[in-house]
Length: 392
Ligand code: PLP
Image 1 (cartoon, rainbow, N blue to C red):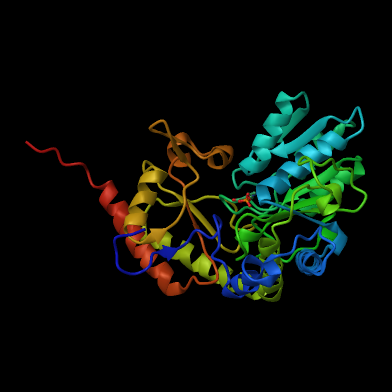
Image 2 (image 1 turned 180 degrees about the vertical axis):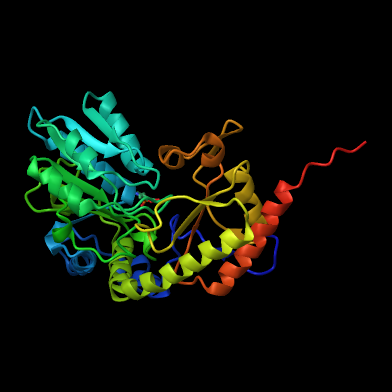
């Protein structure tokens, strides 16, 4: 937290969103009180009440993405949904289908699962992106083999916000008998979405990116898709995901999905205006600032910028000290800056790829917030650009 007296300005909605008060209120009776007694697998009335609440949430989450109630399987996170999609599809595939296609810009929940599968003997192709982060249909088409089981390409990138034409990719996969998965964790709360017309077999969601609670996600599965469970135990989630359901979190996810469905179009319209205003003001204020990612095919709330020679973590810490919560794709490991894999993939040299700062806007963001952030960020960059004085 900042030492400043007012609350920091939160521009990190891609990392997580605050829980909507209506969501929190709906969850409370399942955390404490009579509704918290029931295990959804129990036959008695408490159990039936918990089961009914989970089922209602399942229906709400399904509606958010234009899927059927029976397509939704709750998991403990978006990460777990991605793991289930990749490992579940590869494990269930009949021989000789042993090939997985994904992209170089996926979230680590997909990338590291793909790399793990590779160590276990599956073959993996990672598709490149162009300098705006887009994957070409030609590269998808060329990569699909007769033995391809699954094509997994994210709907929108969490760092640079580039939105991929996944309906086109899923069509290409299906034509060749492969399954198609998309990680829609960053999009479902913000973009209109129809599971059927996207043509996906598998789609991952996470509640905490849409003003729901952390620690609950879902995998949407087209009925009839071959999928092995990866968590074994009880027969919860129709034997696709063992473990007693996190009823309160699932209820919260359902309410968050319902709220998002009601307002996401209006939110997106407002956010696009704010995003474009912010980009314009940053460009005017900070000479040499570079916008990363596609401007035409971009999430309404994402602004990712680089400033040559300034590393992301330093900028980020300065922003934090000045009451602005943002994010950087680069990580500090063993004292050195590890450039973002996404910024490297769009062709940025190490200097720029280490300097990415991601601002992600949300429901509470106003023009006034953005004006303040432009002023503070501009002053930080000015200060960091000053030549270092050497004392005598
Ligand atoms: N996929 C994408 C694109 C994400 O942005 C994230 C989270 O940042 C995840 C997956 C993982 O979701 P969770 O935090 O629910 O595990």
